[in-house]
Image (cartoon, rainbow, N blue to C red; front, top):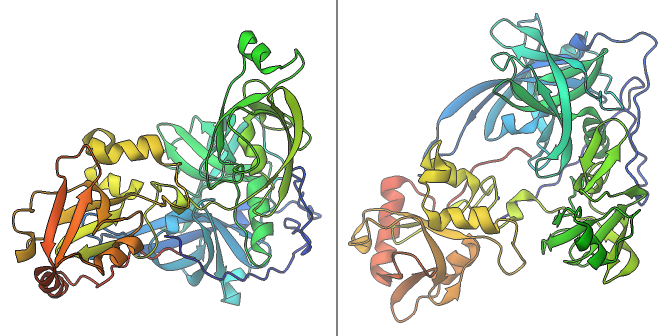
Length: 508
């Protein structure tokens, strides 16, 4: 969380009462623009747009990734949109094997395909080819504005009863969250026993969002204007995904600090404290810049801006909402006392390109050499230490996640960990070693599994030498090349380990 690419070609037919899709010619974006749905003569019943999505899958056991993980079945709530598509919160589909859809009150199920899954946006589109399924299903009307702080309804699909339950909640605030800094609604007073991922938020007959998580009487939902933008973008090939600015900043409320930077009484401004090397802001913004505005929107001294319907929102959302990779966003900064007009060309920086990704790589997820098991450090691997992984995982693998995970670069792409040792002749005496950060293999620095495999192809003097990062309990492991070769054959036969190792399949 090393990238898997795929061609995703989607053709959407525009239905008048759904959300309006963008023109094929993409203008240079200077300000987020939200397109409103065209209302039908009579307001549709939102329950006719809500469907039950039944998903079967198998998770990967990252403690032994070559084996079969735990199978699962889950129910998601989906909404029908333009062009015969179903929108769902995408992470309920990770590692899926089969997807079926049914209408509330109907026992008939139709097979669905995952047309698009954006792991960073957390959204997915499904298609259903059976024309009989669409009889009686109406495309949802997606609200062009966020609902504000008010009561909402939550629609929850129940597979056992082939029904959609309705419960209530109250929107209490809005905040950017997730990899793409989308504006999410916080919904309080929620019965979380009857609310789960992908439930539909409804206000006055219009869809206002999809739930991304729910716990402890609260739920968070991605807003409808993001759903509109996602559907619009998915309708044009190639799908560009979401973009982020990838920098962090400091509030400028202290008057002495503001004066030292040359800010006047009427200026807002957010002090740029770090710019991530692979992000959109790299090459445009610099550490020490004061961000004054994004497009035509002023950034205030607490790092927020005034959103017409959501109130005060953290300014990084201005680079994500309504924008995509390739768009050029004008910004104004104060640099060394001088005001400058700059342009930020947005990029896609997928989550698996972070130094320690929050989800495991989609392919080539592990490598076994001479009985030594190597994986890229990821949040999913850290979860193998249990519910309390933040206190139970060894500090040597926690520290990169907590301190460095955004600091990847073209040279330093990831962190490789020796996660375990299999009992073969070549590893005698190494059985107790696990969870060590790898520095070099055969004298070559390794930041990816591909680099590790290439380094193992060039042993030194009849030996494989694995050295570990400083400050760990073990400095090096040495394997005899011939013993390691025999161990590889033994491991493949005994554990059914693929020679190169293949990680989990992620829906595309």
